[in-house]
Length: 283
Image (tube, rainbow, N blue to C red; front, side):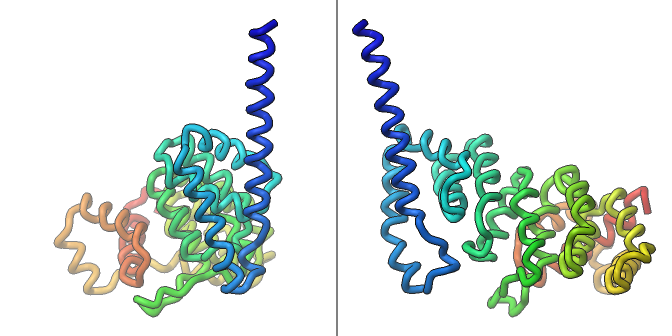
């Protein structure tokens, strides 16, 4: 009887702790940044910092519970992004990173800095993780882009999607983009075509070719697909540069370009993609 009572006490204590932690999260993450002024967001900072410090200060006790809460669907959407950031700051575990990606997919992208959102998923994609689920959320916001002051350029929706999806394996995202294509608006459809072009994949090219001939699509879309198919010419300077580097260096240049956000990186990605496309057996 004594052992049974002890086990029951431990179970009840764990349950109470879990309920307390859940309530604490709901009390802290009781807002959406996109609906607050800058001043109101600033006032929320200390409570978020305290929560991060609390979990980080005792990971043995709180990290398992954080994982549990990130798996639920009942919290304010902002928790799933910020809580994922907290998880990623405390662990380099593969399973935890996969959990964070699933949780990020539940956030409201309006609450997150677009630049930070894209960079976060780009970093994870470059590590080989499948970030397709949270990445395609941006396709339902036709104004999705961010400005890079250092390079005086706008990173438009197509580049954002490309930089989140293309660093990972093609099998993670191509079928998904093809499946949702006709349900998207024209801006998002162009973003999908752009990303599929950069993927240098035979299935992607077949789909882009089919779009170019689809009379049921707006001319704007079929014409864009035709332009992308024909976009293969290298400049004189690019041709000269390519004579001086090896295939391994070319591949490294592409990999590097997909981890940097600048007009120079876009130019490098553009150049290496044209070369890859020429070398693909399906062309």
